[in-house]
Length: 107
Image: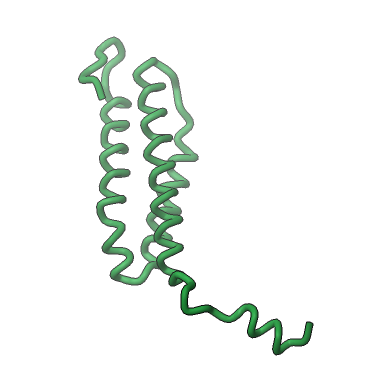
């Protein structure tokens, strides 16, 4: 295969989705996985388990950093997604600060 053929076969096509759309979709999926992980962590905390929060911290850091790299309109579209993750983190924080033996409200 010559270089002209290689270039033509790898050039963007009119039907290819924009790169930012794909990045936003990947970040939305990351946020959904983080939300599920945080909900699981909250259940473990309510059950009296101790947690290593490193993975959650790292995931949230990656999500925030990569959202900042998006185009402004794509970053704006991520606001509800980020708010969902934040709400999950708030619930986890409340569970972590609840005294032992006081289950609080169901989630």
